[in-house]
Image 1 (spheres, rainbow, N blue to C red):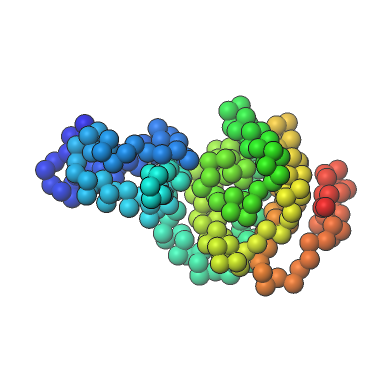
Image 2 (image 1 turned 90 degrees about the vertical axis):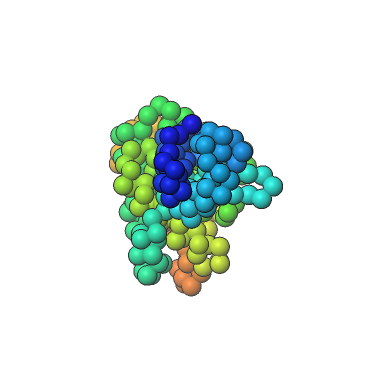
Length: 252
């Protein structure tokens, strides 16, 4: 049990600190259920209302998600910064997509250098599962909080906490836009699989150049804005560059 002062506010802070530590230290992995309310009450030594208050606070931060009748899942190891989310919300979605592109390219480059064997296995598993399922639905592709999201795994493999936090904030805004139909998947499922294969191979072989080029090509065509009049043509100046670089820009 935790040793908490009698102050209710202090108990609440201790409870929140305990739950958050369990998540950030990966004691409760992303995608898994946390202990039941009654179990947490016994472990921490506080009442039901204190537990619920802490869970609501972490849900607001995007770290937990409660599903009625099922339980509370871990959504993310780091919170979606309210300040960052509000800051990004004031910017044009096109600019946010451009910024997301920069983050993803940097993540792919860094992952090709810093990824661990365990992280590589997670990426390989995610890629294989996408093949088995025929790609990913819009809901899965946009859910940055999924522990098996290919893009999220690439970001985590970069080894940069700052990059991960910025990416989480950016994707939170894009996910919200996707829910109302503003952002859409601009690439079909086979193209997504093909692009992910290029990025995965580069990370496997620790090829920084191909990791950057492969991810740049992918993010140039995987997400779009409904208001866009741009077509996803196979032969654009950027795609021609990647053809010359020896990467596979095949768009089916």
